[in-house]
Image 1: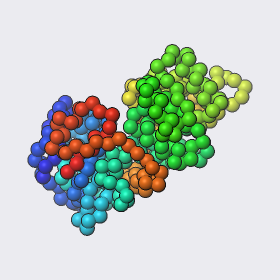
Image 2 (image 1 turned 45 degrees about the vertical axis):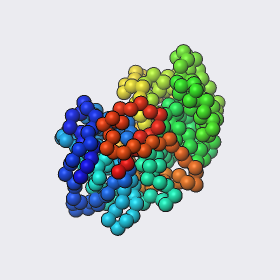
Image 3 (image 1 turned 45 degrees about the horizontal axis):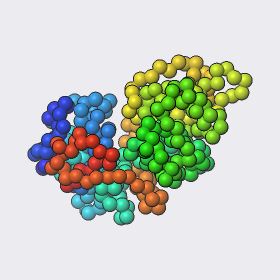
Image 4 (image 1 turned 60 degrees about the horizontal axis):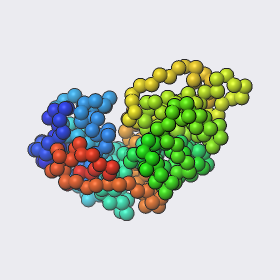
Length: 319
């Protein structure tokens, strides 16, 4: 079969021949129609992600949209190692697929699944979000953050506050459902004060953090009451991405003097089958909730030149 093939963790995949997989016990073979290029896929294909394989060559791709032998169109995820989603065929455990609603096209389904799942799983399965609660999205100007606004609004958020460095992008987020925006490119003490106002006033019952790094550290420090007489508000902080850095300085006293509850959402925080179930819920809501994502379809044959292309759209390789 033809596939995107990683021969070197330091180079983009090449369009090449690769042995087609056959389904084993408990597996299903999928004829792939579309597979999205996400930060997770790129990190795995470079060998830097904690879930990366170590054997080469391999076909990258953690999920996609395809067709089963009986003609059903499905979203599938977590293929057998070496046989990722970016080939003509992939094989996945039978539990790791859900049917795609008729009203959602291949490219949209492939593009929206991973970023939409990140916020849906974080809110519902990790933070146990309730309608009417307030949500703060740290790093909302990217594809995942923009979709998180739409998901939070659909799930019934009472108030949505967003952060970001790009002022022009921040100004567009009100149209997606954001109620307030906090620029991150301001002095740390001013940013901390603004976060403190949100925690104490508008409310930040749940934080979806796509950045980590300095802005997350500033928010966590703002949640501390420094031994105040009144109990600090309960804040469920869900760590999803680390675009701004993998490590922060986090004194234990911050936890002792705040209402913070720290958790993460990603591979391993839920079972693979549980994450696929979340995507099924997301895809079922796409049409009814009007969920949108900027996606660009690219033939898989162009994978090498498109892999590191700078773009604001979610690239989706099609077959």
